[in-house]
Length: 363
Image (cartoon, rainbow, N blue to C red):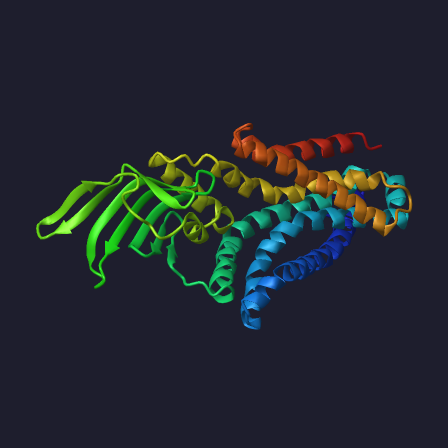
């Protein structure tokens, strides 16, 4: 029969219903995100007298990140609305009477949500890291009027400070420390006078404490190595200065973040807390698919003529439960209570299992 064909009339109809709702819902969510973010940042924009052009560039570059964040709730809402509206028009009853099961009507939406997940994964790996770096750049340089003192790569920081040029492999907010620090100290004529190397420097209240630091002083015959005591060098910059120029995980692709973890591990620096962020880069895009798996059988259990408000409220509740579960598992992963891979994928696994149970129990 035609309606049983994977790309038959019923499948195409259900797919059109879903996509016809998904696109405007996604755009609406992005616009709401922009309005909320604008009001949240209005004080900063006014305080620093940001130009309209700078503010516009900030939000334009932030839209790709917004899209990835609002896509899962848009998928839930679109799936619930599509099946809810079909239920209100008695189309679900007609399909069931014609021998079409919930599973068969779900196939096109599940296929589309999986395609959206794959697209989101590619989007997060290509567009989002670049645009995230750009909107952070606009925020710091054009809006807050800060001097650009850091030169970044995916693995390290070059920073122009009071003592000269700093090269830092990694800045750890939790440990209040920087690792693999090298300072190229310059004189007033911008000539190199010494090089300071320290495997670690910790920020303690209002000063730096160096560990196993050595200063190589330049003389007429080359460099002379001089061990430095923990408080043997005054560094004008604070930990916050270095944190401001370090790239966050959302500014890196999966491959770049994986390379950073491997490079830090080879140098003996504990980068295990980055592993949860690494695996989340693969897990989060597939939230679109697993939330659709739950939303479809839930929509099938709605009463015959559900209100739009009830459908949206249900979608909000389903999505909220997912993000609460994800936040809990991520926190447990960051503290070491759960393995990083399990912490990143736990919410997806639980929701996929819940959706499978709901499908199997559907009559």
